[in-house]
Length: 222
Image 1 (spheres, rainbow, N blue to C red):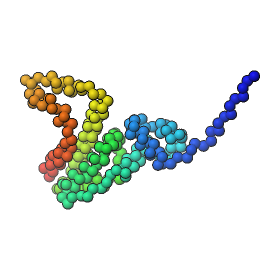
Image 2 (tube, rainbow, N blue to C red):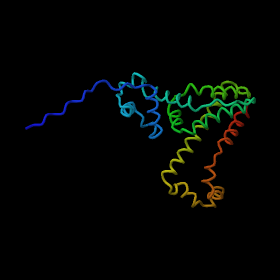
Image 3 (cartoon, rainbow, N blue to C red):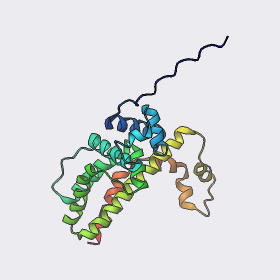
Image 4 (cartoon, one colour):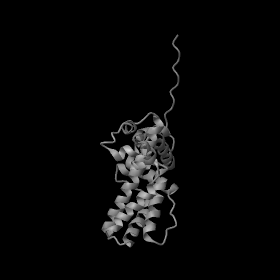
């Protein structure tokens, strides 16, 4: 005798979701798995909703990333007390940006992958550009100076975090370490001289030294 089929579960409406829940879930996805794994479909599945329901709150992935940037900047970026000298104001504002981004490297990945920015962070950009102008650069050259400072800052974080992640995933000797262990002093005397110290030297945090040297160069030609 055939068994009666189980009653169908009523589908009903998906649970109500909030923008805050969307941002919190998206932040967890990118922090644990990277920006590439963040899709509207994946986000909806994590929340227990549908992609269509998400579109009532965010237009697309780009808008979602902007919301993540603003959320992170609001929570972590603190306006420092700025020194009186404009050169030191540039240093202070840039260092505040660097420290906030270094604590969350996926933010750099978002910022460098597209023309996205957090409006909350514009105060820091203003301090850098204004400081460069007060140091004697024209507004146009100050923008170029900010761009150089940003490239240096973002690049330093990307390279350092990528290297740290690689070392954490694999403790075997890197290709560079293998090459440096067998350098020919007659062909590359300086590199051979520091080969055994290359890894620890390049792992040192010299961001501040590099920033000040870069700033000196930008201001030297004013």
